[in-house]
Image 1 (tube, rainbow, N blue to C red):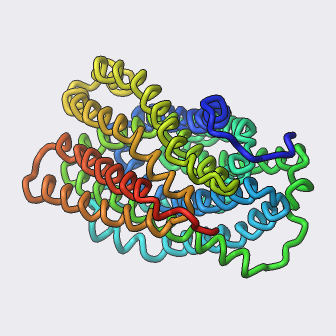
Image 2 (cartoon, rainbow, N blue to C red):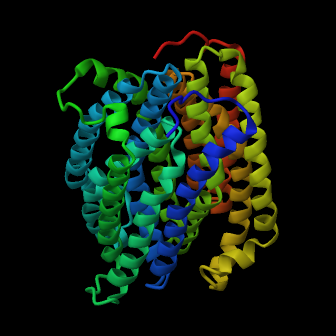
Length: 446
């Protein structure tokens, strides 16, 4: 294992970090696609309900993702500064935060969520959605611990180790989905709720594998992980100051998506089914983009930690070119063969008629995301996470105004509703790039 964790900005370094991350993202996205395939076989409506509950769970999972990104930036900065023992303190103290947030998520799901869903969600699917969520939410502690490994492995330039925990979780999830949804492999037939139990067990398996890797690779001793469980408020405060704006950023972003799905539910089960598949497609075809985004966060923070701030804009440009180039390879076939691609999941004529133009809208949005999210994650890497929150908050206001006007006031097709992604990524790009070019981030200490 390399002692010096300081990075350079070459294309080779970028790809060495991004490609393992992309594989680690690809595998669970493939899992989500298989999960959608299974649920579609249960009949119309189940895929849509899974979208509604999935976005709800995503609200809490992105809170962990925000903590992960803030922690990753801190770990990367310490790696750039060659302060390896500080990394272990950051990782250990983050566990206290994640367990507290997980407990809060469980309490809210049993207390507040039923009130909201009974008020705004169609009564024909409300009880089933709530029953699923009350099972699924218990996977949150496992998910948060699993996400923390991302911060550690990516922040210390060990991204190639991501694949093993991800692979274990995904294989387990697919097998358990197949068994518990349909009653195969000697497992009880649980239908829709079987997917929730399968996900919880798979997250636990992934977490166990990850911590086994951390122990087996000697990272525990090298970075001082778990050397003490003493509560250190100064370290926790540093993590929260860095991560809390990101947590709020991602939470309001996904909350707006839940608002979007609630509006779509008013158009019926078919519109909800199509939109859930679009959400899966967004994740599946955005895998390389998110890997480059994570790489941007880490490398920008590491380079600044080395005192080389003047190289940041060059680094962002190089990563953006790679991200857009790889996305174009996926973009062109999806635009040409949209209907054929959708028919692999659901061959219903009405589904294809509604879904084909939506997928093309989403494809353009993914291309826009390929450069916009690089700029946004570069802002994260600079340590100015309050700016991230400000950018997201302004963008979400514009986004919500658009979708409410289009879908509730004008009652237009969900094709116009999904064009909101164009609005979203345009705002993100303009505001993030403007901040990076301003140079106001230089000299920020974290």
